[in-house]
Image 1: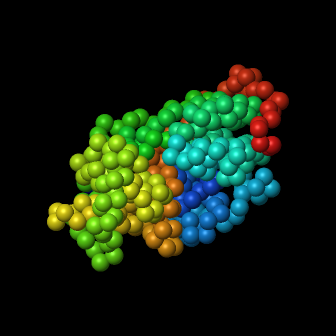
Image 2: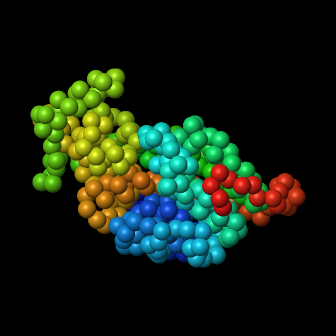
Image 3: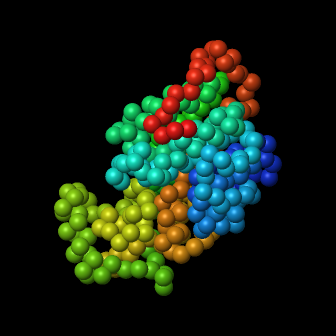
Length: 337
């Protein structure tokens, strides 16, 4: 089975859904899609209207459009998941951390406190472990104080069938024994993911002009690129971001055609590299669709994470609160909870 057939098949929402996963900052539903494919019911919460529309037209679960606050009503659930906004901590951004209004961690922590899920999981960029490590330590302490064993790992989606190098911090809170998913032996290349699409030039293609080619060459020289930042079909793609998909920058993802012309990625191609099935359709303008894809959790990566969560829920092993070392005193974060 080739890559496209595999994701079209595996990432179909399961017919039976045993557990409910509430997805905060759900985006277009990449994380929820992986969980639905593993037999979870989902309910997403997201502020962006296009992302909500995408979620609602593709997933079984419902996405509520709302700007999340501590007062937002959330349903009781077995699992709390989320892609807490990563821009404040991304190594590709300014890493303003607490000074960035997009920081959603106080909301996520309060949701854990309010809902007391059996297990929770959030995904974020690796930048949270660097300049803002002190804040990450406070987040971990606050979640431990709520009675959870907290474990985290840096995982690369490329090791779980996604044709893209996408390193992400995965943090899990549980009360028993949780096992992170096993790394797969084989990596999928961009060429395997795109197939014949990589050699075509559909009418909607946007080609680089001569002036853009000169700008890109200057950009790559200034940033000391050893290889052109074209999409190399023989290996996994670079990390997809909103900036290199939707932005007119020298860092953009682009395909070099056999005739020498270079064009930008199409929405369908970006979606495949992010492991969205071909049947998954996006709502909104082209820029909005690219932003949804760039911000998403890779669904195939989410599928493997959801499998580990499901195995945990199906096991009977749980620790007593005193064994976890629960501390009832909630510490004060630098942003009030």
